[in-house]
Length: 253
Image (tube, rainbow, N blue to C red; front, side, top):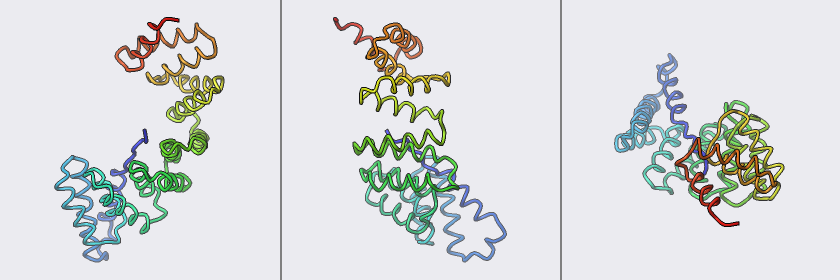
């Protein structure tokens, strides 16, 4: 699954900054009104009032069509309203207006990958990650990897996951993704290494414990597999992975 990191809060802060500084006194009235309506629209969006959000965000775009943040917010809104063509159109416009804004690039990429435009979305994620002003490049690389994986481009996905780990070596999600990829390629020792790095943080998930069970079984380490299995059943007794383990243990042979 692509980790959806919609930066509505950052958009809101950006608008707030525009509307609270002395420079806004010289801002043309339509642009100032657009910023205000955008701030209101995002607030409604965050509260789940989509009808009010649509009214304000549509108005913000109308008042200032060159407001890149308003275009991006409209893209997010229309995605939530299940209108993918409108959503992508607004996001493309936002990127064209502010092509070096990593937050807009990340949001546009999320929408594009969600709607199946994987190559374009992956490209936007990478552009966001490579921007030195972007605060979480490891997340953008992770998202690029997930987007590539959804398009069955495993080689590209692995490259992005590794870049994510270069930025943040203990980032759990790409550690899991790499363990899973290596397991599928039957590189069991490498898969074990990534799984162990994940679990070294002291945190676990049912998915990584179940993967660790299968890795150790493939490596012929019944004791380690059993230990991971016990952890899975103890820590996540109601998980789907715990059920899979129980089903596997009931099978003969």
